[in-house]
Length: 201
Ligand SMILES: [Fe+2]
Image 1 (cartoon, rainbow, N blue to C red):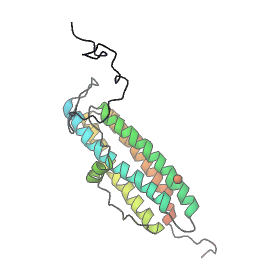
Image 2: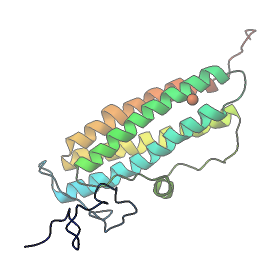
Image 3: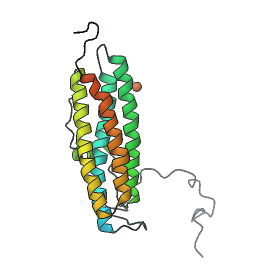
């Protein structure tokens, strides 16, 4: 009869190490990047593969915009500091929620959501800002360009999903990604309208 795993093979005494966490482990990947572990949701693997590819682009760009908002939340300067500091953090939180929603849709389509910063940096189409601090108009311009990139792709990807019958992805890209980004563009854009602060023209 085989010795119990919880007993020492030689002495038959209870093992002293069985309650220790087994750290430092590595192993094979159970799903390779770019593959689909299809779930029974009535969509073909071909459709899931196409939607996952598009959604991962939107995810990488949304994660980059989310982080751009936090960078500017910290680094904003000048007499609009307080309002922009708060606005940028509000938009950061809303983008972070979108990130989770997009990533979880990728997973339920049987795909793998891009997750780590180095991988996101390779995939994003949004221009990398300098590590240093920039002026407010430049910060805002960068944010608006990132929004437009995401909105433009989201509309195209929503059309692709519609053509393939992937209504869930179409709905996410329009109802959440496009609408949320459009609303944020309005709030941010108004800060680039050159209006007098004290004396009317
Ligand atoms: Fe903060």
